[in-house]
Length: 332
Image (tube, rainbow, N blue to C red; front, top):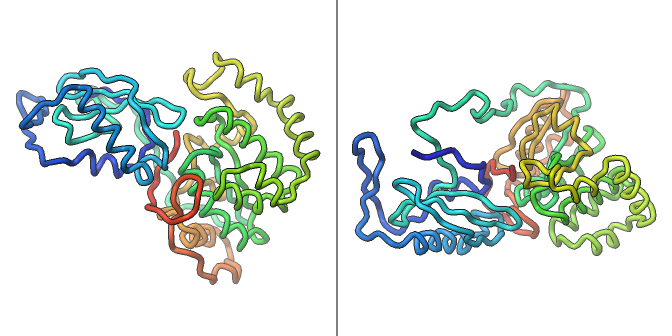
């Protein structure tokens, strides 16, 4: 009945909470799940209720991004709504009584193919140990959850940068338009040309989102930056690929090919993805202290810095300060 839809990166809280206006009574009728409601609203009213709920709670469920309705259609016992969040469109499902919103659906009569089964990251105790751990954080520069992970990353980087190899890398496609392609390229070149200034730039960017201000505050050499971006664009055809929509991933997302080999090696599927000593792993909650603990477990002999305590608070998703709920949500 329910066909599997595209992976939707609104936090799982929306699945649990749904649109809870009142309780529903569910029963099975000849193999079909039905929801009994006191009043059936129109499809448009139901869809708009879902949009209003997301926007009312956008700081918690959509990384601060607003949602808008594209269209709504009937799918058996439910409505399928097409909505736009930020620059991207997604399919979701809502019950006809307007009580429950499901960002993801599965066909109960169709077997899930092996390749569709969500892959699990390595548990922290399976991460190989080394004297000098290699820590890679793959992000999209405007992904709310990637930004949350970068806020987690920065205090640990400042603590352990002389004890481990730590860097920010980029997912091989962009979900947030040309501004993300531009920013990915900008940050790649800052790391390549003036790595010692990158943490200063990134600390500014994750809070303000103002790249020009952050370039100035971090005292980035703009001549070096311009030369690097031009040379990198020539090498990887970044803007040629952006302008050729036939090359976009699934016809929707422009490619960002600088780290294609690493994305393929680690099976990177979204932002953020954390790789330590060549193993993909998860960090939950996304707090500096938890991230530090995971990295420190990957040392053969943890350095004295591992005894320092960092913040146990998870930062809010998206650009800006403050704390927020932590999850394993990704842009993918």
